Length: 227
Image (cartoon, rainbow, N blue to C red; front, side, top):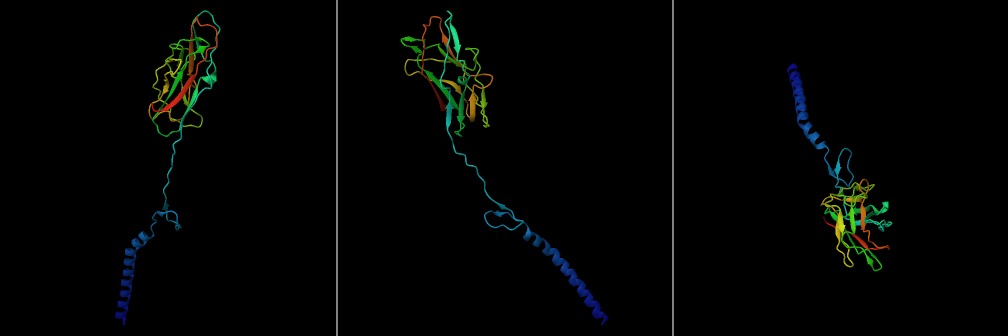
């Protein structure tokens, strides 16, 4: 009987060893089965299981627009000398470009003007009308300062224009000239041109021989897509 008991104890110990081995082998399999795996969101997902979904931002193109001064004006008293006159009104010394086109191809602003006329009197078509980035010198070579508008994280324009810009007038069909032109991938967003250190200077040259009168011109501004 003692021999049987010993054998039974041995079997019990062996069974215990087998159970430990079975647990060692089965353990990793159970862990793998319970590991959290991401599934598609949109249905009920058990606690501890992640789900994934797609997220996208759609950007629709807006417009490229120019907000310019409503008028330009100069006044002087004849003093017997040739005079270079700048428009002194602060509101006339800047304009707003809003490039919401999402194209990043750049843009340019053009100006054309008809002959300055007072009844039968006219000012010369060449050399009368000039613009630059200065209200202190008609001959300044500086560009108007550009700045992002409030609330716009813009890309400032890289202006390729050479200043001063002579605007040759004509009695009819005046030829537009670039007064501000940006490189591609610049000038994106809402931007004020002529704010800060260098305002837009609109200049006219008034010769001493000019006869008294009010000389009027039609000035046309336009913004065009592309550098």
